[in-house]
Image (cartoon, rainbow, N blue to C red; front, side, top):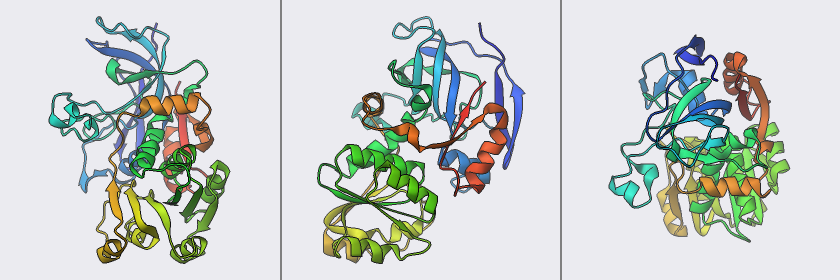
Length: 347
């Protein structure tokens, strides 16, 4: 038996309004799920704070949210691998499956992707929604719903660490200790990085990074991050530099920090122009590798959490009830010194 389907619609910049909408019926290949926990992603916060995507205002009202755990309520007529009561997490890249990128396994760059919570496709800030069964992953019995809601951002961190070829003995720098910076940190630690240097403007985020396994933290609001990182590495820099802040300023210093022959991985969403000294990169014969979301690693993320290798739940600093979604989003924008990762517990 399903209940009310309350949805938190973004109706204006920084404004939600609750509306009751019909509970959808699962069609062929779909699951009807009841959302349990949902995370606030940086992109969600940006959309809510600006009302814009790629420099253009998007149509309102709109539903945000794509990082979630849920319980299966009903299955479509042809779905056999799931049943009501299954606990799941969701990979929100709904791709076409037939383009050259999907067929080659690089489905994360499918040009026909539908990504809930990226305009114009409504997201998951509602009690019930239907999703493709192909994009759902069962949660092991020893995993909590809170952990399940964090698999999507962890997949980003794993994708970054894989792109950076992190392995036992590698040294890394993380520029930015927000949620994605911290998931990248956890992934690097799990993959064996020997030294993890983190730089951020917020002391509280640095303390969280140290708690999660960083070996060094630099408060960039008080110190020259470049000078300090080079001092810590005897002037050599690190094997891998991750830009996880989404800032043109931090992107611009990556060539100063990368070791000769090293890798720079661009993880954050940088929407402004960046002045860059490419000759410095050439002298070092270093490489720049961007990532776009993730691919083929949700199962790895689930297994790493279920096996105790990655304590992903530790990045959560606050959980709000669905009735306080307005405050949750406000804090995600205005209170970054006290909150890092916010989850919303649905009704």
